[in-house]
Image 1: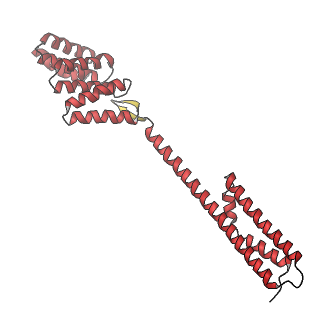
Image 2 (image 1 turned 45 degrees about the vertical axis):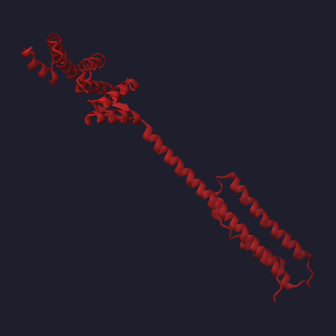
Image 3 (image 1 turned 60 degrees about the horizontal axis):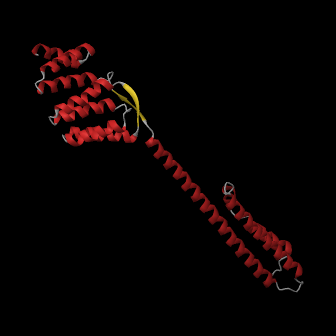
Length: 252
């Protein structure tokens, strides 16, 4: 068998170490702990090389070549083990970074869903939150489904919770309609009067006045019915509700 020299053994060790994945070290530069672990592993390899060189220096020319080969094999196994540890660290860091990236992407998407959205309500732009939009849509759906009692409760809760909402005038208007649908004219009048007083610039104000006049008519209060129709024509002359009011006035 051929005897290995000190230089040959050292070259073999370093050649094997050269196969350690350089890309793993580069990928760990952003993580201090992982980088330190890799540096420690490389230090172990250097230690093994120095130890092997020291042993070779202490060997006599009569030392068996087989013993040197066995030591060389053990060194190669240790390097392979260290290489495996480096690869595990690199893989774990890569997975951690991917999980963090996915987490932040998901968090950003969730936050964007919670941000108010710009919507157009009766020709005007308004910022509406997700919960706000959901509450209004749910209340209106109950009204459309004919569950007027539930709708009235939901609409009343909405205007109290979101008094500055772009949907506030509409919610108040539909609240009046829900009461009217339940044949509660007094509550309907009160709800629609809020629309007229609190939201006079809303397109729903004219319709609210027309509904008030209809409620007074059902209550046999012709005087207030006529008074309301006159006010409607005077304040909102160009509205479709005013045109209907004009058609009703001669009958009063």
